Amino acid sequence: MNSYMVVDASVTLKWALDDEESVDQAVGLRNTALSAGLELVAPSLWLYEVINGLVGAVRRGLIAQEAAEQALAHLLVLGIRLADPPAERVYQLALGVGLAAYDAAYLALAETLGVSFWTGDRILYDRARAKSEFVHWIGDFSQPA
Image (cartoon, rainbow, N blue to C red; front, side, top):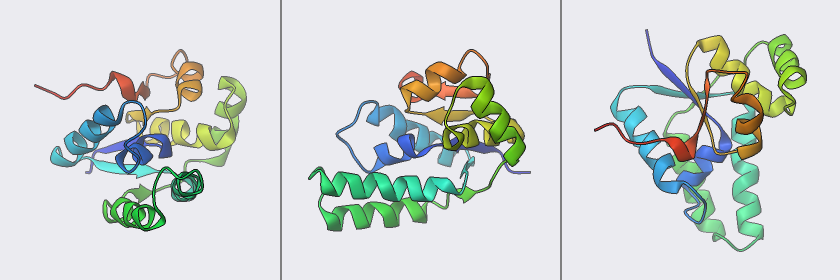
């Protein structure tokens, strides 16, 4: 049986855009997860959020188009497994926690799998942390000794 870790677009984009907060923690999380044999997983909307983040970075002049294309290729090579949680649970969490449905999808997936969910989205984290043991803030990640 595989062990999983849910990551959202805010974390994975830090692997490509090094001008953001908590980049070292995000890279450390990725490296630790992969070396421990954890399979990274996200809802299928992750792919479009990542593409949108890269397109936005190109448009704002933060990254060259070619670099964004390479970043996307590298993220796809990581083989993040796409899996969608039950729609009813996404709905319940979105209303109950006060999240957008797309943010609730990550939390619902982690809850469904019973695994940790790492985010770099402060609003999502602040709203979910009191109601979910699965959500973790990327800035809190520290590499195991």
